[in-house]
Length: 117
Image (tube, rainbow, N blue to C red; front, side, top):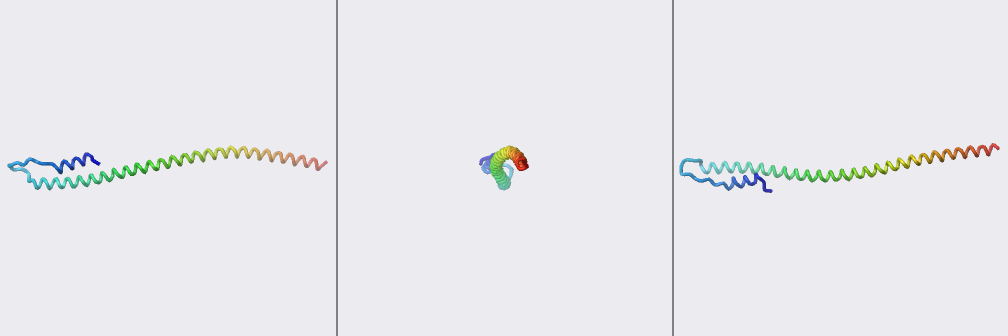
């Protein structure tokens, strides 16, 4: 991945200065300082790349988990529909059972009357 920090590191590494005959900075001191700066920036760049990779990995994991949640919610919705249907059928079955019980009681009463006569 080429980013601004990679470009900066490359520029620092390849930077050339005009040498003056007059007094100026010691080229070895300048090179040593730039070596220090480059090492520090490379470390920061490596950490940034690691964090970026972790972020991408986390984003992928979040997408996977969101898909799992979506699938689970669809399954819950389907189960809820089945529960609602079973409740409706259960209510109807309960009504039918009450009617059958009522009819059985009426038949029993009729049988008692017939036996009494």
